[in-house]
Structures are given as C-alpha cells and as structure tokens.
View 1 (cartoon, rainbow, N blue to C red):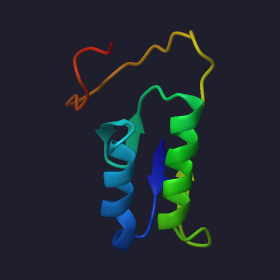
View 2: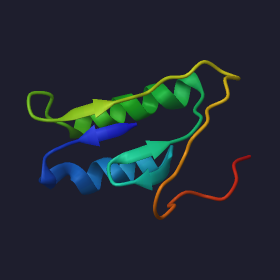
View 3: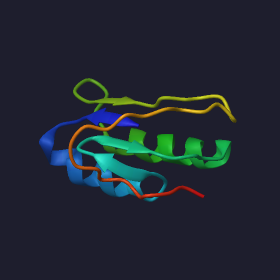
Length: 82
C-alpha cells in the first residue's frame, strides 16, 4: 500500500494501515492479507480519505509469487517474515 494524503490525514492513515500491514518507509506499507482483511482495510481507508484530494494505491500480487527486493540505504522492515 502506498499513499499520498493531505498532511491532516497522514497519521490516521498510517495508524489504520499498520493494524493490517508492516510499515516499510514513508507512505509505504506491505504485507499479506486475507480477502476479508483487505476489504476491511479498504473500507477504513475510504472513511478517512477525501477522494478528491488524496491517493491510496494497493499493489495486489497473486498468492505464491516470489518478490525480489533490492534495498539501498537504511532498512525499516523486519528481518524475516512468517
């Protein structure tokens, strides 16, 4: 999930998203969700944002696909995933 929201709503969006996902870096979170949790997250986000001002993007990957990531700079993610 990546977001670009008005400064007034940043804290609320981050707090809501962190209930479901892991914070990676500014305005970017990641994690695996069940369909029901994903729907709850979207519902909560829609209640916070103003759709004419804010943007939230969910990157959805098919189950079981491997994702390679290359980091440059300070890591802000857990060392492992379960």
